[in-house]
Image (cartoon, rainbow, N blue to C red):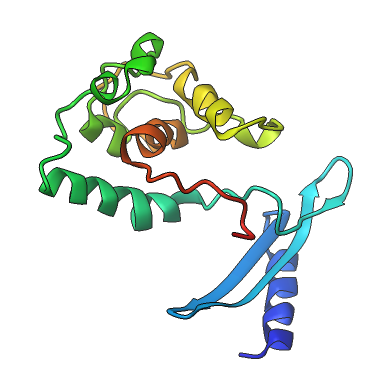
Length: 171
């Protein structure tokens, strides 16, 4: 695929998608071959999306990064699925999710609502984003059944399982 073809694919994706912006990266073991971004970052101002904006990678991050990393840590004996969030992150003691197990957090059974409005904020830092997710009011009790939720996964990924990778799409 040529860069021109990639650019055309991006334009079609932006035009056909309900999402206001789309980013495409083509990589191989040697590194990034091409990267393109198109669409609108802010619908109110019309600001164009750029490589420097923060991008929500939706559920792909959970499946491709969080779950394999969590299972690697469980397999190596560093983390138990029965451990509670507060066991690994004492600062989470005041959170409504403090007693949720790692298994509950990973399986969307910590009681968090489906989303929190991280996209509607201008985050000052990674820490601020994590605090918003950590203190989002629960929708239901911990352990009451799985329901897809971004906040359920944000806290363990960011503080229990994360290896410090938090960068804009450009990087």
